[in-house]
Length: 174
Ligand code: FEO
Image 1 (cartoon, rainbow, N blue to C red):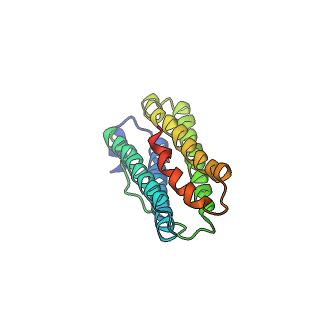
Image 2 (tube, rainbow, N blue to C red; image 1 turned 60 degrees about the vertical axis):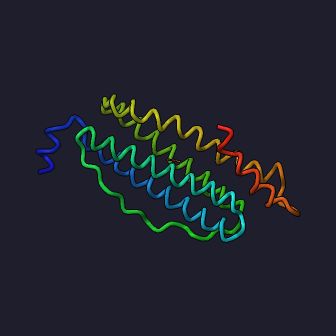
Image 3 (tube, rainbow, N blue to C red; image 1 turned 135 degrees about the vertical axis):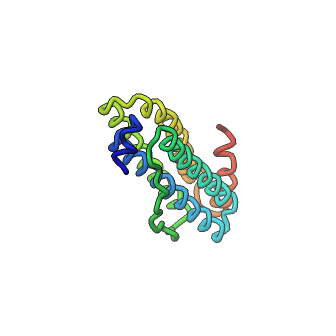
């Protein structure tokens, strides 16, 4: 069955596997952001909770974009199994640090896919992945700017309250 499917598409199996892994990574990123939203909400950081909910939605959008691409080019898109994600964080700041680390990991994974598409001369997938290369610039920038708020505003006194307020502006400036 798989060989028959394979004969009907130019998508190489190796690329299909990488794309399905990326579907899974985006689904996991979406779940991670949900956990971050919940942590922020229950610790009184309502704007940050809203920010992470929005990020979670975006990650689901990324997942669907790749999922649809695999189907469009005749591959087998696999509904992802999402591993358990971290629900607790040591501090407000560490939530944003975890978010940045997660985005860096996604960027590296996307770069690996682009490298592989070049090796396999899969220019359609390489072109498709360019959207993600660009998107990651913005995603990492947002995450870094959020962390900068902790340094610029400072956490003392009502600092964290003001940081949470400033998070509101992070995505509206784009
Ligand atoms: Fe879809 Fe934020 O990486």
